Amino acid sequence: MTTEKKCVILKITKGFAGFENTKGEKMILNIAIIEDEQAACAALKEQISEYGKRNAGYEFHVTHYSNPLEFLKKTDGGYDLIFLDIQMPELSGMETARRIRRKDDNVMIVFVTNMAQYALESYEVHAYDFILKPVDYDSFALKFARCLNSLSHKLIKKEIVLVSGTVKRIAEVGDITYIEANNHNVVVHFADDEFRMRGTMRGMENELRGCHFAYCNACYLVNLKWVKELKGDLVVVHKSELRISHLKKPAFLSEFARYIGGTV
Image: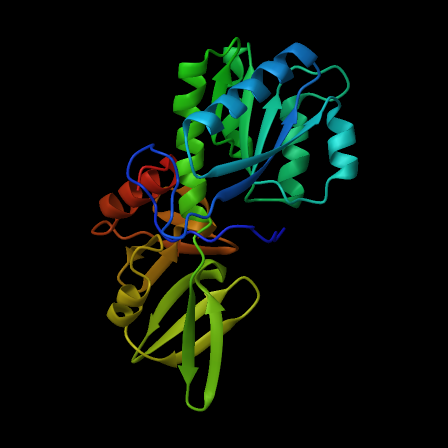
């Protein structure tokens, strides 16, 4: 599900310091809390608010859902981050996450629970992190900063112009799934189509520097945003399976780990 992000990112600070940009604009994030315990929700809201007071550059819009079925019925996307309790009476957080993933592959999910044994199962639904209750502010701030740092990189907006003869296409970098070398041409792949043009992989690499693309082999430059699964020597990029070469594998896995960890 594609959602429009209400931010322009011009400069990302290093480490886990607050977001800032050269125009003083804020990074606006829509956050959902799905939690049936009012006290736990209030505590989480307070920690989010406290983080905003201590770190300039963010604006958080927080919506609380006490019932996961209410969330699934009312929401049509638009959230950047979902804090999700696992133990809820009508529908478990894990099943809620599965239903969310059927609609949205990209929204960041963070489980908040007192049941540590669910940590491994959370990877099944591509949960970004796992927070144990009760959460003290210092522990929360560290993990929340990691989420924000990762989101800030993923929301970077940049457009490039693709040219093939007299045909020009303006493409948002985030919509490119991967780029393929084909003789003296490059094929720019999108979710639903592709664009073939004269060019080199080195030229595309330079054009996309800093936008989180990495080589899985010499013929494929992958947008890490679209990586869905790693299967041995294969990487699933949207709906395509691409081979990871032995030569490129260490660097590719390192870049992907940095990307999902938000420490780029």
